[in-house]
Length: 168
Image 1 (cartoon, rainbow, N blue to C red):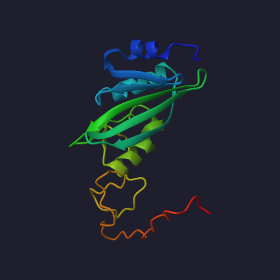
Image 2 (cartoon, rainbow, N blue to C red):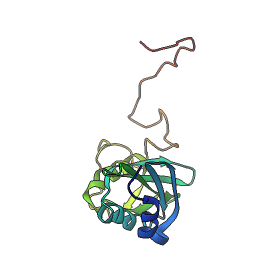
Image 3 (cartoon, rainbow, N blue to C red):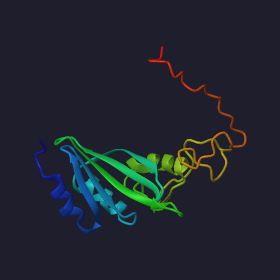
């Protein structure tokens, strides 16, 4: 068990920034904040509470792109997932990469793959996609036009054999 009550510590440190907080498992806490508070919340978790950023992920939802920053604290083996939403139609949020360097590249990836704009990002250049990748086409969004991107022809994939019980 963790040495500290991290839910209470987060409530104290983040205060009114918290829209929701939950601890579904002993070593995992989910904290939801508004996109305008995500920089400050991440700064507190990283600098004040001593968690390190492992990665971030994006999820395309009907309301926008949910961004989850995954922080870990070694001593108590505690994971804090800081969640915010870049809402449709603008898909804009504050950049955590503007607060600490560890978030810069993952935000660049999310920007390219989901179309999120990270306000204040120190280096918003492309990172993954080819220079000639079409503007406005984001391959990890649900509305990605399968097999309809000009100049991009993925291989046809055979559907799995319904009788197969395992792969060789």
